[in-house]
Length: 142
View 1 (spheres, rainbow, N blue to C red):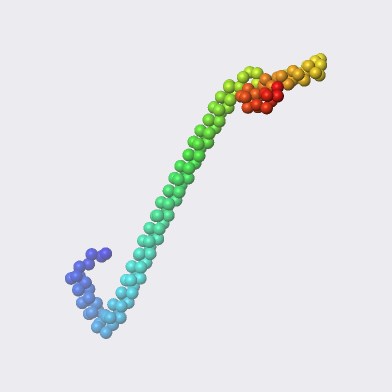
View 2: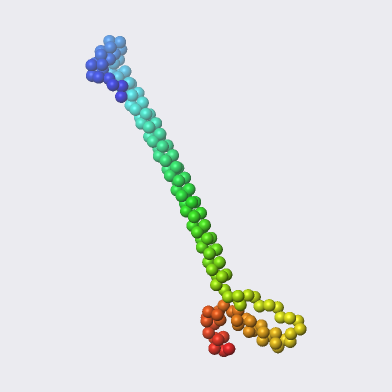
């Protein structure tokens, strides 16, 4: 940590023995050991906190990128769905025959019996079920 060799530690110990004295040296060494241990724990705590903050920041970035990716996928899927719906609607509109137009209003001068017959014939002609052969009961009855 401080790049102190054995000879340097020996010189420091001799100077401490001379300055502090032999009777107080063990107590001072014990106190310095406790302080050094506290300092190491504090440094390790700070390193752990910094590491946790870095990991948390990375997770936030990852979460943000995942949310962006999810939004872009959602937008592309909704765009494709709307495109497909519009294409299907165009196909459905173009595949209906022109006789499938809504029936015209009967004129007021036509007799009720003739207008009823005209309405039933236009309804039968314009019914998509009849055109596709889905309404077999009405075909058998008619």
